Image (cartoon, rainbow, N blue to C red):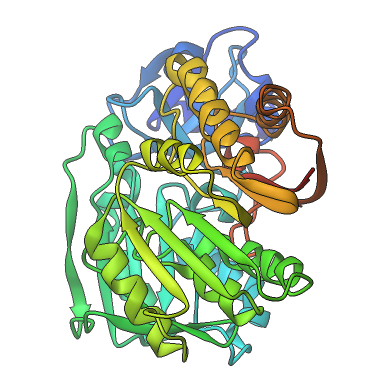
Length: 412
């Protein structure tokens, strides 16, 4: 028996899973998920969260990851190197690699809020780490990540020495892992509320304990700057910012020379913070902006009925499709809201429209906007495309990590 066969036999005595015949291709292609339907059996009686080796049907070792029987994604893969040990130094190395990839952002004094760890796309399944000034916000989205919480907190403190680390694992995806929501201070000092951050030289107040996602939509940073450059060619523009949250797109629009921004959101507290953001950046919310609290679909219908027009409309809605079964309904929602928006843009104006539903592909989203343009009887040119900021990388072997897409359109 050769050394490779002896090694495989020894590994088979450790906790492991064996795949069904023909189900090994994604693992060989370094996709980080193993679904329950691909597995023949589990050996060695590992507990959920434990490390397991993954073998093909013929007994060849393929990869190592951590297990969770309660999840449809039963194994989250960590390494495809048979001689790589998953220990404290492994996790330290993965964190350091992720931080190294953000060196340019770390050196940029005009921005102090960005993503440091992007889960699977940084080789750290289930772990999100965002920087907000001197604080870190973390999410432990899988059993494997949650069971290593203390280790990650220790390593983050050693590597970055933040003022504090706050957990925001209060997200629905945890329920698929059999985990309850969790949030609160994990180490250091509690963050102020709001905590003021800087993004591309502009300032924004963030509530780390209560804000959307981990407090702010960091993935839109480069898209906000992109749109601002387009608006700079339209001085004096009147802008409608739908699903505005705390008004970041609106602040960028005014900084680019817009005359007035209407922030529209269902959350009154978010609109209050949007006014604070305007003042913090030197704008007068009484003269240069207005806040409208309400259902965006209905308010857009009301504005259409009033014959109101804007030079630019921004649509950044929440996720419409949380499962494959919801994709059709989501496309209807996207078409409806984009149809309404197109009817509110003056000829020659702009529509910036987004989808953060990962199950709605960029191609499908563009087809939906095409259908909305036909029904609105408007000619629409795509002048730019939006995606995640660079601190939200997408691993090539993990296309599921690409969720945010958008179009910058000129409307005639």
